[in-house]
Structure formats: C-alpha cells, structure tokens
Image 1 (cartoon, rainbow, N blue to C red):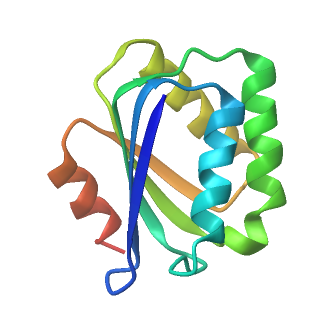
Image 2 (cartoon, rainbow, N blue to C red):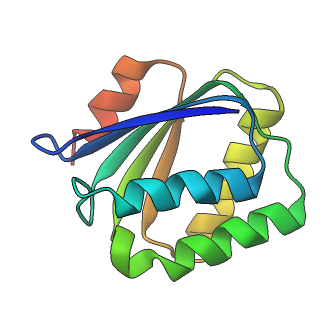
Length: 126
C-alpha cells in the first residue's frame, strides 16, 4: 500500500492519494496521521484519490471504520469527503461506507467522482 497526503491550510483542504490494497486498519492509521498533523484543522474537507486503490472489505471492516469515525468526530468535525475512483470493488466498498456513514449521522458528507476537477468543485462549493 502507498499513501500520501498534503494539507492546504489556506484552502482548508486535505488531498490524499491511496495506491494498492488497503485494509481498514491501514486506512485508520492514515487518518490518524492526518488528524495529528499540525496543519490539520477541524472541519477541513478532503479530496481522496482512490483510482489506484483496492478496497475489498467485509461487514466487520465497515463497522470498525464507522466506530473509528464516530470516535474522532470531535476532532474531525463536520466535513465533505470527495472520493475519486473508477469502479470495481473499491467503488462498492466506498459506496457502502458512505451509506453507513449517512445512516449513523457521522457528520461526513461524501460523494463519489470520476475526476479531480469535479471533486474539487464540489468540496469548494459549500
């Protein structure tokens, strides 16, 4: 797995890129790294590039991610996550995670996109 991120404090945005197979524990570790970054601020939106990532999760994985997202809600705040991807199991996993997050009211508004331009336009439109 390869993970990279950068924070643009002036724009209030986080940019992430994931490549390879990601299990839920790896994703949680990446999110913790972002939340610990001194440039991170509560309520920052993010643009997440998963076009080269492989997420093929089971129910327990989604439940662990939901529990983690709930545990850091005070740190993360309400935000938008634009997820860029193309399809396959990663699309299905991202869609399931979105539905679970919405059902539990985690304060994360997420949408799926095929282009970075569309993703950026959406996170900047609030």
